[in-house]
Image 1 (cartoon, rainbow, N blue to C red):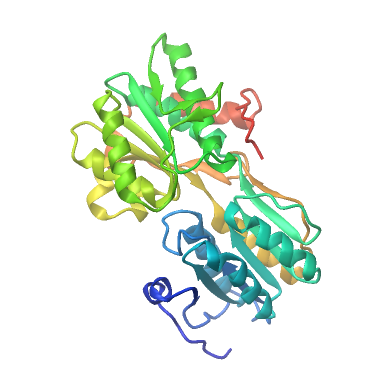
Image 2 (image 1 turned 90 degrees about the vertical axis):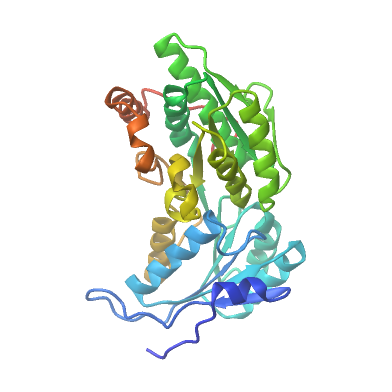
Length: 353
């Protein structure tokens, strides 16, 4: 297979307007697989490729598909709102069989190009677009954040935990709904009165920074929660969440719960000791599965819904903060996971996919 030029992520992010980040030279397919003629293009939202969230994890999935199937994949990096529609059009013009778009910001552009190009397979991550050639890749994160809420309540020494979002959108508030319900479950089981700041599930209203990039907003907001007694914080705000980790590092006894990817792995090393766990979306496996379906001619518009049962969502290991989680509490969290999988507990949310 011919080698392809490698363009660094840093260069892609620095490039103006429509920036193209090409992958490393095409790896040889693993095992007995044969090289494929298939290619894929992924368009990021304005959070960029290294967002420590689902842009990054979706790209990692396509890189895994390169190894497994021998496809050729490239990422087109959006740096602002004006990039979005042109970048989807650029992806279509590549002639690739699969176009992956990431996030709600790209919904309109995805629908528009899917309608104009019915022969091309599209997948959109973390958003639902209804079209015969568009496969939504969504996650019932409330199931996993329910476990995280229960864990947070069990670990809290102050009896106050908090959450905030980047914007009041279903993929964000779904996390927050599950978190609140998990805390409520802990209170029910233990006769406790742990409070949640930042989100009211009944009114579907809470605290938001208004964007997913400004780290300083996350730090300021988190410090406000800490000043009110919160010692476990769940930011659902992309890169803004790094500000929550920064605030935790400056306040004794405070930890954060990351989302989408394992915060212990993707945050700067100085924040690892403050990550209690993460609510994970296994976007990587979804991307590999979709690429396989395209190659096999089995692509369809049936949504991929990640759950605890199929491994699409999960909570990460406790890493350095494992000593905070007693064996009893860990066992309760595992019991709840099994109960959700068995259907004995149904985590409700108006934002469920």
